[in-house]
Amino acid sequence: MSEENLKIADIIFAYIKGTITDRELGELTAWMDAAEDHRELFQQIMTSASYQNKETVYQNFSKTQDVV
Image (cartoon, rainbow, N blue to C red):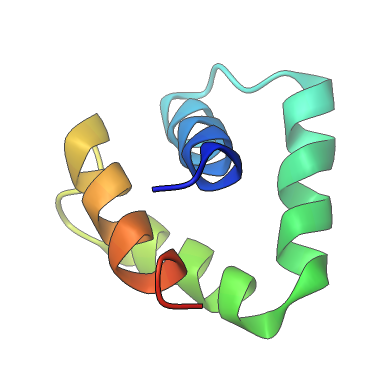
C-alpha cells in the first residue's frame, strides 16, 4: 500500500473510532471528493460488519486502491 493510501486508511480508521481531527476530516473529505471510487470505498468500509478492526480497514482499502 502506498504511503498516501496508508495515510487515508489511518484517517478512515480515526473517523470510525471517533478520534478524527478537523484537519483529518478535511483530508478525508477532499479525498472522497477527488474520485467517485474513493467515496464508494469509504461507503463500503463504513457498511462492513468488520470495520472495527484496523487491519481489516487496511485490507479493504488495499484491495481497491492498489489497483486504481
